[in-house]
Length: 438
Image (cartoon, rainbow, N blue to C red):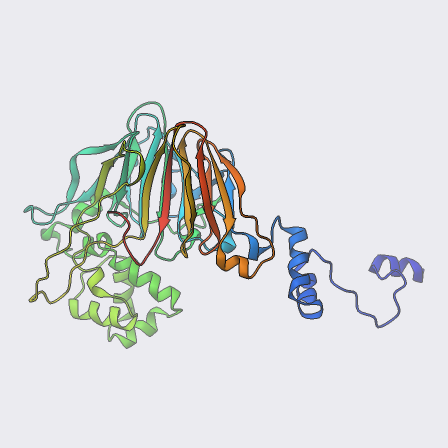
């Protein structure tokens, strides 16, 4: 009887009082190895479970069939009209941008969507994507309405950068679906702000931001006395306040008390359901340490659509915006909408000379093969070689159409690109310090 009890408990005759060590493939086992045997042994133990230890996980190559189906957490009602697959590196990278391959069907959304951050679209197959916004160009003499008068078309060979906080919707330009690459950068730098894994668990987990056209029209109708509510949405004011308050772990009551307003009024501001005084906004932004000048009277444009250039070598997809004239009497300094994602287009012929590196950056980047095939040779950067005995300079990867190569910031270096045939590659560069679009 006692022997059976020992077998059931897993002790197998272990002397009384001796602790059972945790299993190796658990966090407890990793913890024990770290503190008892040292960091290197813990890293080796982790390496048994994961393909490569965290310190040496410098790059990820995702092939065309490696996408994971996801649902946009900020646009739940377009599940049938748009299908998303993410091509992102491991979560622990905390990558600042997300790459999704999207299939846009022919259903036109009935609602408009709005969310923070940046969004770029590059169609690669199909009739194209139609966009319209609820917006008006500044100074044109009318309040926001459907804009442009006819939906703009983003087709194959083009790219678009939109201001996603402006209420917008997108749908297919024809009967056959359009496939495109979508690059997004949320202000929170977290993929959870953009998508949720799976396509059938969204309704109770969504932070969707949608609004009906009739409500938007009421917001800009001065007869309804709802002026200001539209700008809370389109200039990103409500979303900035809500996100910063939540990320600062401050309650509505705490912020309202410090800003000398009623909590119910602050709640309505976050939900864009009221007009608000500028002095109140200034107090809220000051308390939450937000730059009010980056939000008031922004942005300048809803969408920029460009033709992808045909020239060879590295070419910026979007031109750099002109410098703004300084107006010394302006009480709030206006700024062009800032962006951190800078796409660069590379075209190679089979006879092109190999592009030789090394090319490395402290910021994350990615390469998307739009057409053709090429051999990419990689190595770990000089900084990583100091901390690792694994110098894998010259390791080759073959990029094929619709494959994605992620380079971790400060990690892998790109040593060489050797085209196997005529190819077009999109380089996605994240840099919050300087604009590369020039």
